[in-house]
Image (cartoon, rainbow over the protein chains, first blue to last red):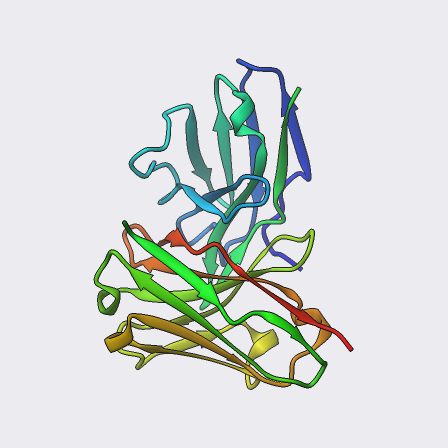
Length: 108
Length: 120
């Protein structure tokens, strides 16, 4: 059972802004940086955000991350059809790397 | 092109063993921590194990300690996962991933995954 809690689903129409939350505790998000991974249907995960709010080269600036206390969030602005995927937050918790429960984003 | 390619998955009976391999190319394999991450069918991601560049440090999730062993051969640019005493709950797609140390502290490159099914 994951120690990082995300809503199971989120949705929006093209062009809308969607936000996904990730709730943790002092031993994970509260004391370590947060990463976000995107998993398109039938593919391997891809690093989307690292160090709370940094985008790897090639990730559109429509994706942004933030962290406050023991929670983090991922925002997708200008939602596009190709953003339909599963999104996972992740952080270290002592010596264990934990992933969030995952959020399926649907583009209506 | 930076690439990770897993192999070795398949169907195995409960209590059996399997060895997964991950072939790395396009980067200096010996300079990076490497990891295994798994995903049960229809479920989320679970980190399994990490190994340091020279193999001197290894870390495991509690559920596989004593049963799984992560190893690497830098001369062959390869990562391995020896899985013993397999259980039905080990059924998953197993991904190898490259881990970037802090300040990035994230998995930046992933393989396509190899499926392991534990069933009688």
